[in-house]
Each structure stands twice: as structure tokens, then as C-alpha cells.
Image 1 (cartoon, rainbow, N blue to C red):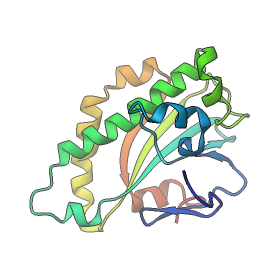
Image 2 (cartoon, rainbow, N blue to C red):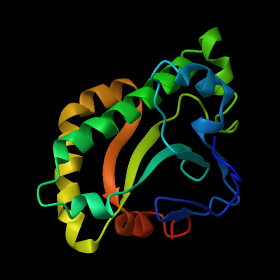
Image 3 (cartoon, one colour):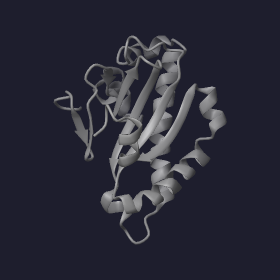
Image 4 (cartoon, one colour):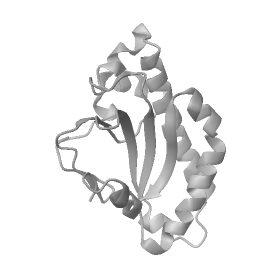
Amino acid sequence: MKQNFTMPFTESAITLDLTGYEYFAFENCVGYQRRSAHNLGEMDIGWYEPSNQHLYIAELKDYSVWLQATEPKLGNRAVDLFHKSLSVIAMLTAVRTALASSLDIDACLPPSWPRSNPAHLIHIIHCAPADEIKLSFVNDKLKEIMRPQYLELFNIVNCLVISHRQAKTAFPDIIS
């Protein structure tokens, strides 16, 4: 369970300040905790952005050391990120279909997020600028596994891998 889940929140050398947003962590959700013993994965933090009515769910990883390895197995990391994404898609789909068994997960999501609206899954990776090129391979491999047609079926706008630096540019008010 995330201890001291307050803002700003830092994990894997990535800091988010979601003050003023509705934010959550599946890890702190009773519905997720009840199922996690059965290999249900999760992503680290999510927030609802009312200006575009999108839900963002992010996995925060520090691959600084791993990416500097002589021959890192980039495909393996993409598969790991796929499994985390798939678990989140399953939880969101259960909530969107209003299954009675998913009420304990629905209670953890931002109440103002319209359940029929899209979600974005973002894997934010802390690494050295020189290693960012390797992340593009991980992103390509994840897209190969997580086909856009599947994402569209589940109302997921995107599932992508970006560097910490790119995330700062995309979300300058939130990520430092």
C-alpha cells in the first residue's frame, strides 16, 4: 500500500503534483487489494483531468541502470508493461459494464470521471537522455502486443511508453 499518499508524490525518481485533481492508486483500493493475490496487476497512479474529461493512469519506472546494461532485453520490459496495462484495462472494463462484482473498484476511481469516457495508459520511464532511444523500441514492442484495435474496443485512447523528460513536456503542470 502506498504510504503517505499525498502530493507531491514521488516514485522511481518521478514526481507528480496532482493537487487540485481527483487522483487515486489502485494499490490503495480495497477492490484491487482483494484481487491482487490472484496476479492482478496495477499501475501506480491515476488522475482525472476535467478539462478534457480523460482519465490518465500512469506506471512510473526508473530504468536508468537497466537501460545502461550492455544488451538489455527490451522486449521483456514491454511484456511486463503489457501485463500491467492489461490488468488495468480489465478493471476499467468491469467498471464500465457496471458489474456488481466491480463496485469495490469503481469506488476507487475519481467520482467525476464519466465512466464511458476514454482513458490513457502511460508508462513513464526515468532514464538518461542518451537511453531514451531504447524506450522507443519498448514503446513499439508494446504497441505490437497491445494492438490499437484492441485499445479502441476498450475505449483506451493510447497505451504508450514515454521518458520522464517527455512526460514533463506533455504534463508541465503535473510532472517534475
